[in-house]
Length: 103
Image (cartoon, rainbow, N blue to C red; front, side):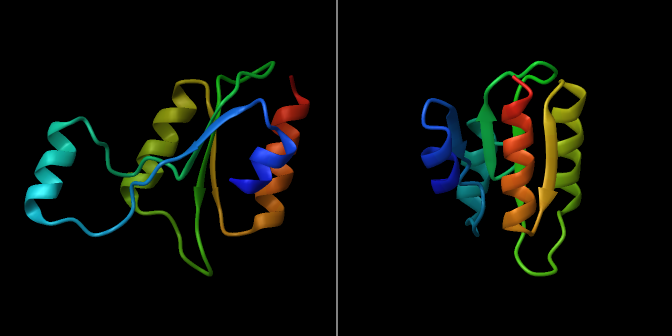
């Protein structure tokens, strides 16, 4: 998020705090309030020449996305978002920069 805030200060981007363990009641409340499992970690609400926004699922080490995360990335792609996952900061920064260049 710091990278986006420093390099693109006028762009509206959020971190989705969707991770963590929940009690059964918290899971119920999350779904009742419209929460969706698998939403990517970073959403950049900035339309470029081809896409409506940029969604990034962040992974550490050798971790890979869960089935619900893959489903959410595909749903966003079908809604004309650029959506991907990565465990490399350099790749993420490069993809953000390329997305922003395509204004």
